[in-house]
Image (spheres, rainbow over the protein chains, first blue to last red):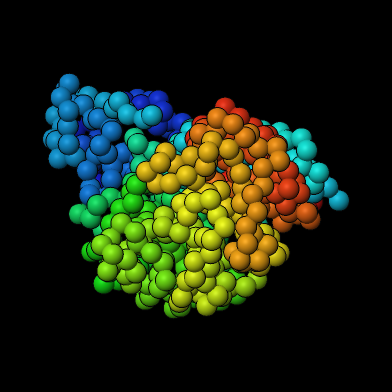
Length: 98
Length: 360
């Protein structure tokens, strides 16, 4: 079964990951396309490709981590945000640290 | 046979490793590792030499890092390291403890996790948070953290944990049920008639005497204590110390009465070494008497502190003693504390110090 089987009928969207996340998952790539109809499905697909990536982006509430921002069409999104065909999903780290 | 001695540092910006031979005169420093994540505790399994680092990143959450090649490469996992949906999520890992065939992790907010596959996956030891006292646990200055993990050396069903500021708890059935073990320890921050509660004390560091599981020591927010019955009853051993306040405690690798502390000047007095003079305090007799060890330590204008997991001994003869400061300096003694040298400085805030001795 293909990795993205649960979302095969979903529209194809483009996803951009923060470079600092790539360092935590050897083999991961900065930009990719995958089928997803919500941000939650994007996270599911990323976690199937690179196990553990969900825990880095979402907490157990579950929701997107406080210092991670997901933008869809330029607007901050939640896990429930729906995606249009060819939507651009950009995952970024927010200002934090110390 | 060449003995290798490693000092494992957890810092606010990653793990560091210092390496020397049995002479412990020259040290080679490596790091930062773990992508500069804040690590609260870096500790090795002495049986496998696997190094574990528990921490949490503001962006990416909690994880336990692991290196099976003495720091050359690292991986991370938090699979299963989570409370149930809807509960307050775990912020960071505060302590790790290899124990026979398992690995324990203490987390914030306070709870206990166990891994049976060397840190690849975790499961919650729910019995601790099911204790009826749980709704009354209050956070200390660093949060509501499970920071001390003390496994019984021969009985894998027994484990002691220290939680700030819920106190010491013990399980004798592998974590299914827990008993508070705080009798005799003070809580100066409560009204006078409530100062010896069953739980709610602010334990800062809990350690066990070598090969003597009934003997425990704890540096508390409010005093220094010894127990000779596995924590059922605690006795104050703070007479002779310059302060009853401090964070770390480290036991000698062989002598059950020898303990090292770094008392600080007080919880609302700045939390640095008393009078601006650095000293490690050592007892040879279980806390009946104390001696200040100052040779080689700075004795003027010192305003650092030492955090709860930032002091350790090694198992060589004579024993090495090490402590790291919240100003990023690492001090070492190769003669049981009699004399000291600064072996690293300008590091990030040091959260933990552990050692690994390899006979190879």
